[in-house]
Structures are given as C-alpha cells and as structure tokens.
Amino acid sequence: MKNRIAIQTKGRIRDALLTLLKEEQNLGMITIAALSDEAGISRRTFYRYYASKEEILTTYITSLINEYIVELKQSRLEKFEDLVIFFFNFWTQYADELSVFQKAGLFSIIVETSNKVLPDLYPTVGAPWQIASKNQQDIVYAIRYGIGGFWNVLSQWLACDRENVSVPELSRMLLNAMNSAQES
Image (cartoon, rainbow, N blue to C red):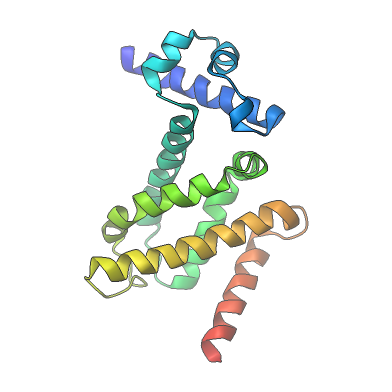
C-alpha cells in the first residue's frame, strides 16, 4: 500500500511539472512551492521523493528509457532498419511530453540521460544489428553516435514536421539518407 501511494505521489509530481512547464516553458521559473501546490502535496513531501526539479525529469526519462529497452528486447528486431522504425514508433507515443521538454529547452537532458543509461543496457539487448566489438569504448562511441542522430532527428520532427510527416515517412527518410551515405 505504501509503495502504491509513493508511485502515485511521484506521478502527481511529474504531471505537475509537465503542466507547469507547458505554462511557463522555463524550469528555472518554476518554484518548488508552485510545483507542490500543483501536485497537491506539501514541500516537505516533495523533498521526501526528489532533491530537485531536474531529478524529476531524469527519473522520468530513465523510466521511459528502461521501458524502451524492455520493449526493444521483446521485439527481437532482426535488422537495423527495424530498429529505426521501432525507435520512432516508440518515442512518438510520448511526443506531447517530449515537445514540452523541447519547448522548455530541456531536450538535452534526454540526450544526457540516454548517454548515461544506454551503455549499460546495450549488451542486454542481444540483437543481430549490434556492433560486434566487446570493447566498451567502441560500444560507448557507437551508442553516442546513434543517440545523437536519432534524438536530433526526432527533435527536428517535433519542432517542424510533426503535423506534416508521418512516423513511417520519417523512418523512411532517415533510412534513405543512411543508405545514400553508405553507398557514397
């Protein structure tokens, strides 16, 4: 019961932050008092769960990344092309939240969190399209390359083309660009 209440409270705090970010579009302007009021909790309760507003974001993003990895493992994707499609299909279901982060200038937190979390999770996926190297440095650079590319493409789509370009079309455009570069 206590765990369920904690999960609900953390969810209310996260939702309150997203609501205030939509209104303010500036994390620095949001006070803990305003955040606590929006969540319907005391400041003391806020600090029981989080040390800062940024911790709410990184905790939320980490949970989404973990969900992404779980679904990625279950999908058993055979080709890299399947990964591209999977990535955009997964993350665009959170397009509204990601757009809030983007408009608030917080998209870099997603990339930074991905850079921290994914190198440890990468070996657990076990997909045929992964790099063959066992060298951790090779893996880190490959992951950072992929993270930067995927998140930058998604960021561009959210900012400019969300209404005009479908997710399958976005995936196709990226795959065509990658194939063209490979053929050169």
